[in-house]
Image 1: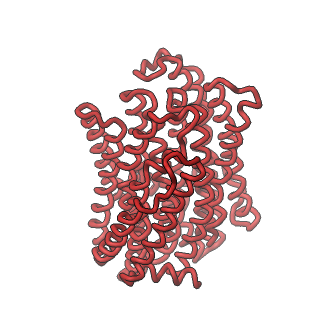
Image 2: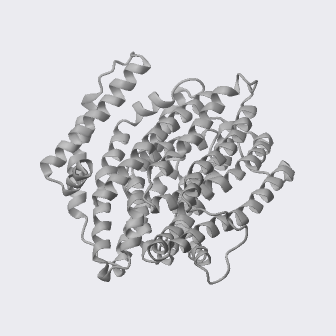
Image 3: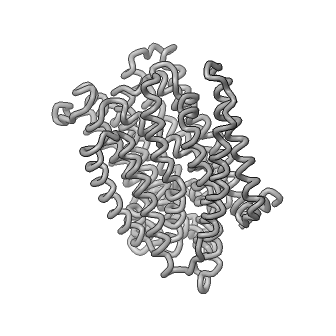
Length: 518
């Protein structure tokens, strides 16, 4: 377990830097474009390849490949190398034609054929098609990057795959900073230039993770064909379909949220949802995702243990650790939400009127952070034991329920984007509870009641202390407010939370201390 936590710490360190760059990028986007129809359109177009990345690359394909690749390396390293190359070749064979067809269709379909009730009218639809033609091509390199990252994780390399988002964030920031000096002044020209830069950045990401595998001899030249029936590579794709559904809840729900906001809520709604998701993903990537990525190869190795006692123990400690790190992150972000949004985004075209919708949407979404983390962890446990169908069936039901709840709340309330965030958090809670309940047929898990109780007590203390740590004056500078109302409260809050767990003698905190000594 110490080794797993060390890997999680390595992932978190690089992810922290990436998320900091990501927040700078989002700040530049918000202040340069503002929550108008141009940025809403760009963000919706950007969401499409990212759904492909999370479902096919980081989600379904990686979750299906890692157990097979890990087991093959234990018995036949040569077969493992062949498996990886065949999967890479199959992804290229499948996705390259799809990207080409989508690009051609986006460039040739008249905007008049898509009479969407969107802010910006037909110019927005034309821009959406143009951006989709460029950005959808990003799906190919980013999915291959996720496959190669999964292989590197299995080989014990976690830092380099975690560092790849630095590249795309750096490219995005450079594009925004260079747009005006290069003569791109109109908002539509800026986002098109940005889209081209992001597509190029996707291939740079791929190079960073594929080259080490190639130099180590683990990645051979990929055969550009689908794997033959009955091979290990074909088995990966057979198990991928239900896995894709099982890991799709958050991604598909997020895409549905943005689509509904784009069509049913006034302009700016997609931007509010996007920024709320970004604020959710910052702590999620540093906490729950880091634990889930680090523990997945170990779960795959232990899935064959008699009685799966070791696997159950690993999963239980990972779940308790997920609660330990996500609950205070969610509560702290809710308490400090107004200060965080003001310090990160206020300025330029992001005005005072945009602060409260972003704060409200973020708070409703971040409330589900612990459950999102636990659901992803338990889903990986199912995939490790070869049960891909159960998470898939549950995901289909929850996605449909989430979509129905979204429409009902939008039609019957004035909550706007907050309604979409509330249903997403509720879906995350239901997903985590039902996955944990159903996993008992694979391994007997102990109760997390005490882990929840300890973290709830410590988090309550944290929330009581945070309001008294804001020291910046109302008329202070941006730097003073950032340091006095955000950075200082976060630092004090972490110290208070850790101290509370020390007094509670939490075993999860002891595991983290052993990781640092190790």
